[in-house]
Length: 445
Image (cartoon, rainbow, N blue to C red; front, side, top):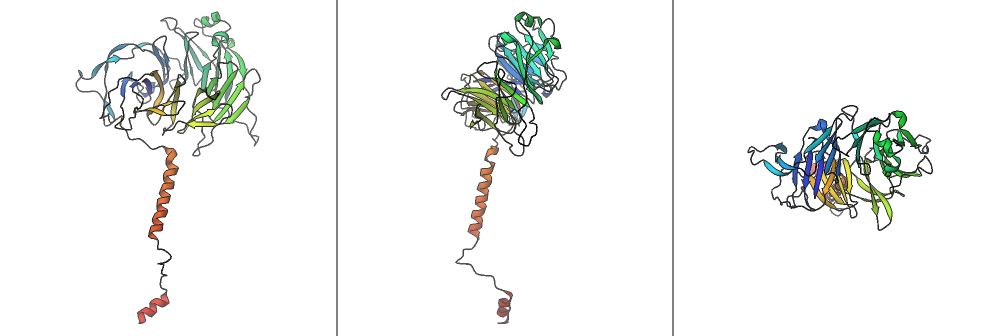
């Protein structure tokens, strides 16, 4: 299996080649092959990553407002890395440090697509029907990039003056040219940027004006809670159900799942609380992946919270179906591949691949830096040598899952009680301590 991973600390693109059963926390397990490309530093780290099979491209968005296009098929020499005491160094012998393979050559770069250097990209997607890439930043700056030729024409506009946390296209965008977004105190909104394909193509000649962007739907908040307090809004993810432009599911920073039918009304048809507060922290849905359970004929959603949990829920009932265990830090990215594999990564610096249906962990690889995004390039097993002496970077000791902390403390308490029971005298051999009067009589005799 070949995966591409975005490294926060170095700003590099890492290629991971491994097979099912790979586990770098076990020395006797199969070890992966890891190579790094295009290190630009943490100030230009990769935030979003997408693969375009028809174009043989890897497109990434970097902090600072850059979009980079890498060739998925380019071959050439590249520098190998060695790891000494968890520090990346280059080999002293340059002839031994070169190898031949896929080097992901940079073929084009577009800069200045964010309003300021700290404006993060929250969306990067490819629309096959229109042959475009679009991006959106937290400040609401949207960029449309045409891939019809090598000119990479692009158009820009602002979708909102409020913070944006989620931005996606309508599944029927070729017919209605609509986008949907939401964010912190920025409720679900649908906008239309063109009326026909000719109007859409003209956007790349002239950036659309604010009066050309039409708001076709603006959601209303749910009713106040039982204390008659306003319920806060913070949409973090948006998904269309059944490729229907009217049925929309959102998840929120406060652990809620809401279902909208734009044909029926502006308020959500139902809202369920997926998660509660853990460890005195408000649990929020950071990312979500839609999956289908063909056996039960139901729809499920996989979410990661702001602690360590990655869980699967039924959409309509909000019922917890199961969890994908193993993460010991904040999970910053979850992605699915063909509704079969789930890829997770985050602050514990481990890349994990699960089978969605069985929840079995198939691959676990120590990357050595925080992971901001990861995708599967090729799901087939590769020929990887089983290294019996893995690099120190790959053989980092595993950190125990915090979910088992309660069990550990219970076991320690039981051990303490057993020790007290063994050391304390039994009732049959109990002899009271002599009083002062008895002591004096013993001394006088």
